[in-house]
Image (cartoon, rainbow, N blue to C red; front, side, top):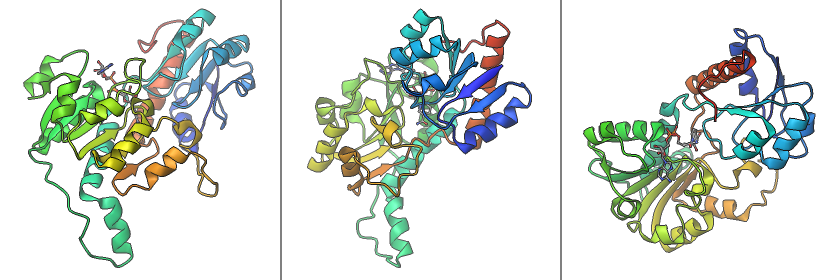
Length: 328
Ligand code: NAI
């Protein structure tokens, strides 16, 4: 069976070729992202394999259907970039990798928190220049701090367990409450209370119409002055312009991002030789208390191995006319 990959990077082909040795699909790797112009590159391929910034909107899905595509296999957990209703109408099935390594994202969340707190990103540059002054590098003890997790699913729970080890007090806001989480001492509260009480707020909910710009001009005002905000979920959970205003006024004390609402024009590419046109993103880079990584939270060997394995199993179930359990 032919499988066409979009947005392929060298690490994708490496991990998928290794895993595919046990499955025997015919993998075709395209470097371009999927959009309305590139959809027509799919020929004689019932399966396309997509990543987070491939755009499978209704127009693209209709085009894919007319090219004979029957399955969209997402090699990621989030599926906000796929119009599921359009896929259903066109008879295209959609599968994803619901869990591959919650540890990868949770541990990266901690990397952002600790680097922002102890200013590791600034210390690294100072020491390289022979500047050993400590002024401006003062942090705070994590012990005893209150951390609010918005979304207490797989990643949120692992993040909570790690933070427990630091001696943090944990608050959570989620649509569903989990008894096991309560038993390890996590306190479920409303979003407003979480924002009011947390020293650090970390976003681990999916991007949906309800969570779009969850952090905005109004909700930023509910946070403690000087609070830290971390987003490893999806970029559009945050209104970036509002966050910039909050950083400028000192209301928001720290910002750690692994995702950005306009990231599809930037992330996963080497743009170091180009003039970046996104003024909002460039403004973010000017703050000393902002740390941005380019959607790398998932990027561990363990996660890539698991993503390739589950994606191949999803495609195999489709080719055998069965279900893998990862259908959307
Ligand atoms: P999950 O499905 O296990 O957990 C999501 C949690 O959010 C659930 O408990 C759900 O009830 C809750 N939720 C849904 N709507 C909500 C709302 N309106 N308000 C509050 N909570 C809400 O998902 P998982 O695996 O923990 O992943 C979370 C998100 O992390 C994904 O949706 C994805 O966007 C993002 N992600 C980012 C990665 C990265 O590399 N930066 C990698 C993997 C996932």
